[in-house]
Length: 151
Image (cartoon, rainbow, N blue to C red; front, side, top):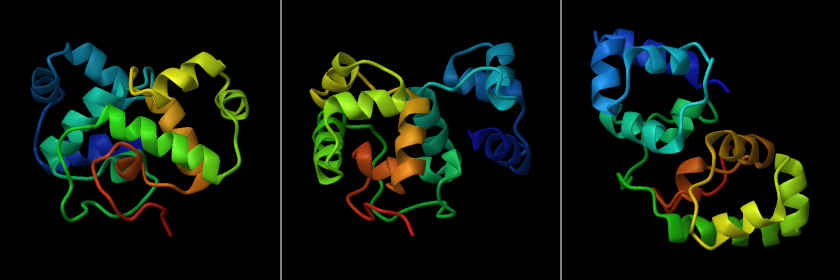
């Protein structure tokens, strides 16, 4: 994923240390460092905190869009809306839960759990969907209502 360079650039541009960002995320500096060098994938809740802190879109952080911010962006991820939008997206692209699960190398039950709003999607799965189908992560997560698809 492409967020590692963006995180480092935002941190350095704002003269913030890894330690300071780790404190904001309530994690160790070592763990934050692993996010920044791509040893570990940052969980979506942590990515959302950074998105809000730096006032940038998740699309921008993930490197799937150059738009740093959208108008009327919400701070919170809406799991129920995400589930509904994921289901609508899947049907729009004529994908069954099984086919989407295969694309993401996961199980049908995981996709079902996402669509019911019970589980927050993994960052890597969200990234894969957004890159492959050119759809906004911020839209899917309920942080914005448009644009749905990225140019």
